[in-house]
Length: 235
Image (tube, rainbow, N blue to C red; front, side, top):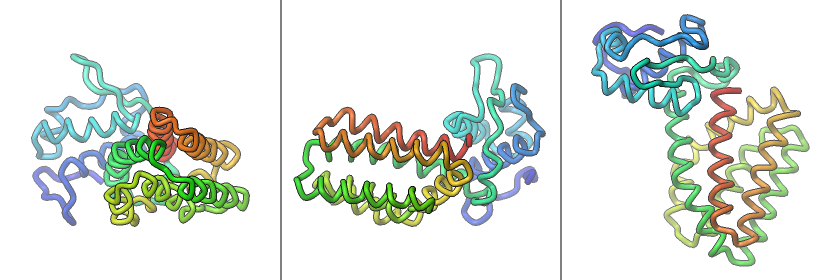
């Protein structure tokens, strides 16, 4: 998927997304192996026909995904090969958007969990418990359970008593469930490890909200979404 120098982004795709996707492709294909130093920002900028800030943006997202580490004065190094199985579920060009969606969700839903812990009514707590039970049933059935997963997170948003949280999740439902489908699809390949881990994370969020512990609820939500992103990109 090498880019021609100076080629314009296709389908509205950002230049940094294309650089990001091509570097992932090269790591998966073992052009760059774990521990290997990536070409310098200047060389990458020349290869892709972009500015160095665009290269830095792509490298920053690769660091967020745990695929690359950077050392001041030494450059960027491949930390691990991404989960090859994710390409069975998502085209390479969509990975940047998946990463960006997780980044957005961590920022928004962490605060939603914090507010829900202090504002949830008894009815909203009951709804959250029902959503958790449905999610647990989906896991027992060895099903993807994306509908139940989204419903759980929407219950948290409703419990903030601020419609902008729930409206935002609903407006982004297609993007969110795409990422959930990917994470859960990969999880079914290793159900003995991933699915119980995911459910513990949801239960931790549920328990913290019901206990009225705002900081713990926020931390549990942040941990869950960060772990979901890790499970997608690292396996």
